[in-house]
Amino acid sequence: QLQLQESGPGLVKPSETLSLMCTVSGGSISSSSYYWGWIRQPPGMGLEWIGSISYSGSTFYNPSLRSRVTLSVGTSKNQISLNLTSVTAADTALYYCARQPTTLTTTPRPGFPDFWGQGALVTVSS
Amino acid sequence: SYELTQPPSVSVSPGQTARITCSGDALPKKYAYWYQQKSGQAPVVVIYEDSNRPSGIPERFSGSSSGTVATLTISGAQVEDEADYYCYSTDTSGNHRVFGGGTKLTVL
Image (cartoon, rainbow over the protein chains, first blue to last red):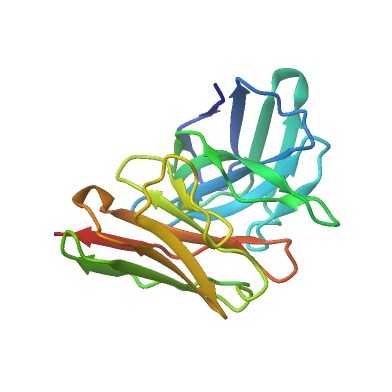
């Protein structure tokens, strides 16, 4: 049974880097059939796609966050990581990782998130 | 940047039909997806590729898309359908994913 588990510090200071890990169990991230994405949700607000990465390292980022976001894949540990630099209070949110089936287009791209973790709350505060 | 626009709230009585719209310029060319998010839970997809219902989703949930507007319809809404609903799609390039702002459905 597929499980996605987000983990990382629950509190980050302003201007520092937010780092989260998503551990996938019950399935392998080393498949061309899927991308792996991050989505966040500030308290009481809506969903925001952050970015997606394939097992081969192909990435797609939200233009509004591109300059601060890095996604990477750790295939040996079946993990996907998220780094978000120079955080402010506006980055306080519940961070979800999700599986995204690869779309069968001329250029492989992440499809819709079809399976989600339960999320990790990160608060940015001094 | 690309945006999908949803009404902030929709309210219906139990048994009535609820319709939630999602507007976006790329929707004539790109699929819409709909997610249900109940309080304290992760989102769950209820409609994919405009009008397809995943297994386990009740038949009262349906989706359609015409021009720049996609619509989620809940026929005979139940109290347990109270939730936030989000549409999701991509821009015309296919490179950027976006969620609508969300619609709070009240059934009472």
